[in-house]
Image (cartoon, rainbow, N blue to C red; front, side):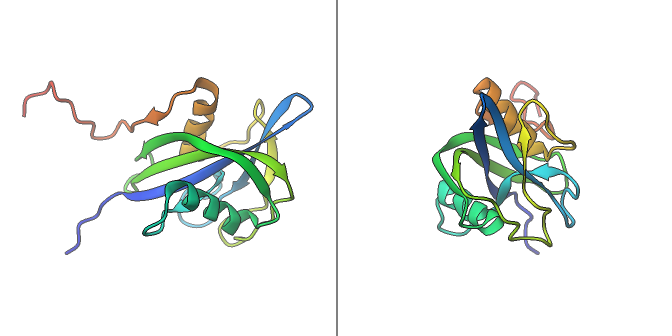
Length: 156
């Protein structure tokens, strides 16, 4: 019998600045995991792949190669257990929009991409995306779940 272990998720939040406002590119999820939640580009890290390469690959797979981004940088790490029994160690990046229009390359998994003002976001947000938008605002980089936390001060 195989042991169930956390999976590694990678994602990327694309930010566009226009008229002194910031916008984020999101789509609504379909399928059996977080249906109807608004999320960014992301998915599973592949064997032997770097974290950033995985996030950028997922963005191309989901939004097409017409979309051009720059200044991709580490945004945060989240131990994501909010939707147990699923458990992910999730790593996200942010990138600046340069040009191009996103296309919905995964219509069975998501709706069309839309731009949202960072001050007026849709709900519900996929929990990792909500966490990473908080990271954009606060500069915080590490977020742990609140399920089954280890407490070294508790004797066992």
